[in-house]
Every structure is written in structure tokens, then in C-alpha cells.
Length: 597
Image (cartoon, rainbow, N blue to C red):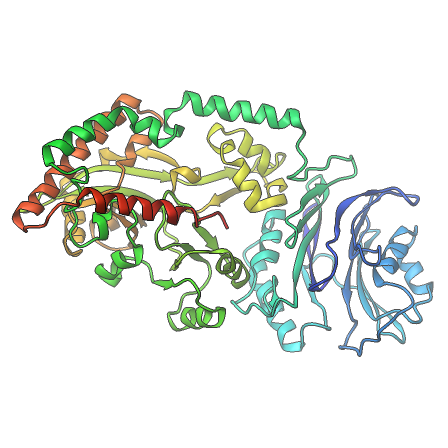
């Protein structure tokens, strides 16, 4: 009830509210259909006073409440009736505007009521003395900020954010509007749309009334409790927490069959299990179970596991990778934001653990509030990295035998991000379920996006839900090894030669085009992985498990050859059993601290 936007569409509108409340206030009840008047109403209910701040009516009317009228007022300790109950009384009437004009508001706290009724948009205000009715243009978008929380300068700045967002969006979808309400701002946690003022006053929910393109519902996300719902008058509640036992069984069965019939989704120990004897054979010949340890002398543990990304970045020329800052565990929020300002790291950003594995705890953060939530939840050192918005992403596997003039590219994997395309009818959730690859990740996506997945995308509109190419997070891997040429090998070898003591591993690269990559421009190494790198082109769905085993063995042979050559030529002892087991124990304990945020 503190930030409201009205966005018209070709066949309706989106009316969306961010509710800011003080700590200690009860958790609101999610919206549902109420039939306690001549028409049905949908609204969330305030547990303290029983009223609401946003409501939609079966006939098409809608209303939302903001605190205050024109100026910040001096609040009294008690009022005759809650403004939330006043809202419900007004909207229940056949003519809500007439009832607002006629009702007695004596001893009611000042408020602003945005009312849509009979196709007309009205801005109704009570300042504690008299009533006002303004008529904004319903063909244009509008934003309101509560005067009790945001001064004139803050309100103008929010207006600028909104106007910038509106430009270039001729036909915004519900997803666009909700995303604006969840991410708009400039990194000021006290005044962004999702705000937090010293944990005493903060945004507790985002609620959107959707009446567009035949869609009529209320989408609700309680940021405090995690309760999500999407409710319409045909009583189809699409809350993410409300699947029946039968539904859960059906989707579990479908996920199980998909995993069973596609080896790329099998657990790593199942895929690699038959190859462990070959690893043991290589170890016996090298006289070390950890024969890889000298492969990349410049990387901790040769980059097999438990290596720090920050240490690897420090060895790379700064122009090869995105601007990155290490946030040690225990860093306070003020120091974090100061570092971001000094390093000119602006949203959106990527946050990820300094020591990680398989994309765990990697997040795209679009605002200061999202970064703060990540910072509060992280139990490990993490990196804050510039988001590289280049259209192509690939993993290029590189190997160079010590003493040879040039290295080689042993495989390339292309990464197709988890993206759905709207058909104008189906929600994002339904689109995900239609794709066997994507429905495997529906549970984690529901936890991440909540009711946002119930958004219906217009036909042809693409939505990327996971903007980084990780197989365990839903990206499809495609074998691009046919792209390997002499020119590309020369270009990648030139890059890798700039990284001291790097001989074996995979470069995860984003780039604008193959031509630019060949010329060494418009690309960025997102991550460099060492001896523990997989030849991830094996996960192309067209490849068999036998092909994967052959490629893994080929790369293990290269790894052993490189490591033993470095060990002999540079007198580097191979890792002993006790040291190797200690490394594995440290990494296992560390992984227990990493969780999805």
C-alpha cells in the first residue's frame, strides 16, 4: 500500500502494489474469493484489522490503497476505523465512487484510493479534512508513492524509474510489470521499490491485479512468509504450494521417467562409476591416486576441486573476465555497497560462491534488495560479478602438453539457456511442464519465482528464467566441436597463454559472435575451470553414454600426461594420499554450507 502502478494494456490493465509494513505486523492471509456482498471479491486480508489494501471485483472494478493523501501527516495513536475496512466498504457498493463521496470519513486516517470502475480511473483522496477526486488518463501508465514514506525527491526519482521502464515497452506483459515491482531502483535499499529500512520497515509483499488479454486474476507474493498464490473468480487457485497428492505423484513419475531414459540426468557417480577402475589404473601407473595435481601449477589443487575462483581471476589479465569483487563472509552491508560503488559494479549482477560446484548458489541479482537477501543468506565467501550481456555462451576445453608450441581445443559445448516462449494462453508454469528438460527444474524454479510462474506470456514473447549456462540449472548443452578450426585454436591458445601455468581446463565464455571471438574482441571469460573440468559437450542429448565414456577417458589421459610432464620437468611432487583426502573432506564440508538463495 506504499507503491502502486497502473499500466494499461490493449484489452485491460495491470494494477500492482508493493506493501511496506513495520516489523512485528502480522503476516497477511493470501488472497481468496469472498462472497459476502452482491458480487464476489478477491483480496488478501490484513490479520490485525481484517481489512485489505488491494481488491478486485467480479464485475471488473478494482481498487488499491496508499497511506496518506498529499502531505505527510502527524499520525494519532487511534482512529475510528481501519482504512483497509473503508476500502472494502467502498468497493462492495454498486457505485463505489458515489459511496466514497457520501461516506463519513471523520476520524479516519488520511489515505489515497486508486479506483477503477466503469472503465474510468480515479484518484480519490482523503486528507483528514476533505475529499478530493482526480481523474488520471486511463490510456497512460501512472505511479504513486506513499507520502508517509517517500518525500517529493524520492517520489520524483521513482517516477523517473517508471518512465524509463515504460519507454520501449509498447505492450508490457504481466511478467514485465511484476519484475519492475521486484527490481526497480538504483541500489538504495531504503528507497528502492523493494525496500528495507534497518529491518524495522520493509516491503512485505507484491500484489498485482491482472485484467488483460482475457486473463483476470490476482497474483500475490508474500516476501515475508514465502506464500505465493494466483486466484481468479472461477475458483482456480494456482498457488505454488497447493498441488494435490495425485498431482505430485504424476509429476514425480514424469520426472523419474525422464531421468531414467536420459543418461545426462543420471547422478555423477552412476555415470562415472564404470570408469573408476580406469582412473585407478592411471593412478597405479602414475603412483598417485591424485595424479592430476601438477596439471595446472598456478591453480590451487590444479583446479580439481575446492579451488577459489577469486585466486584464478587474480592470475588472469583484467580485460579477459568481468569486473569481479570478493565479498568475504562477515562483510557488513555498508562496506559491500561502498565497494560496489567504488568498483562501478551496477545491477544486474551475478552473485556466486568463491568456492562452488555445478552452479549451486549462483544468482542473478537485479536490485540492492535482492543482493541484500543473498548477502544475508550466504554462509560462505562469495563473488559479486558484472553481468555480461552477450548473446552467445560456450564452454571451450583447452589442453596444452608442456613443451609444445601450441595447445589444442578438445571440445566445445554450446549452451542454450532455460527459456520459454509465450503462446498467449499458457502460463510459464504450463510451458515449463510441456518441456521434459524444464519440468525437472520446476520445483526449484517455483521456490525461486513463486507466483511469477503463473504469468501468461503474450504470443512470441521469450522469457529466460535462468540466465546462466549451467546444465544442472536447466541449460541444454549442444556439441559445437564442429566449430573447431585452426584460426579458433590459434585465438584460444593466444588467450590461454596469457594465464600463467594453465595447461588443462575449460573456459566458459560469453561472446557476441564467432567472428569477434576469432579476432579476440567482444568476449569475456565468465569462469576458468581446471583439472576437475568435464568435457561438457558429452551432455549433448544426441550423444550416447558410450560416447561420453570415450571422451572422459580421452581427457583423463591428456590430464595424466600433462600433469606427469610438469611434475618431471619442474620437479613438482604429486599430491600424496593424506593431502588429497584432506582436500576432498574440506570440499565436502564446504558444500554443506552452500544453498539456494
